[in-house]
Image (cartoon, rainbow, N blue to C red; front, side):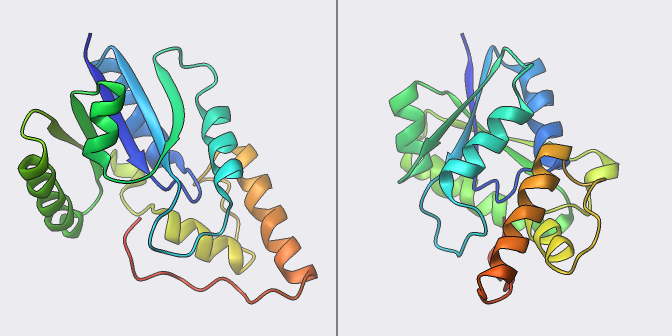
Length: 175
């Protein structure tokens, strides 16, 4: 059995993430979608919410399981016996980042492969940062995320506004 790990913060999960995971499920026996718990960037949604949104997105996909993790991705791969890390590439600038990460992971764990799937063209502009920015400004993200995700992030921005929390500030880090 070949188990693949698809790690990200999923803040929030969007249609591009879903496309990559579903395509990976056609290639591998099992895909573990792993929500990273403690990234070095500020998050809009707490871990529990991100996990629930991801679980809802894949509730009809028997080959896709959802979990959380922290620490090094390759260490988590070993913990769950995943032989492959799945990543998505949207635009050319993603390649450099993913290439460096794949090489670092290969140095740490030569037995774990990295596979990059090219995004579908309709999702090439999409990132969690884009979704958060559009939603924070009141834009319609319905074509970018599933309905349950749109509802959750709309609710979160309404709560932030009601509680007088500072508006969303985009992170310069990649998502």
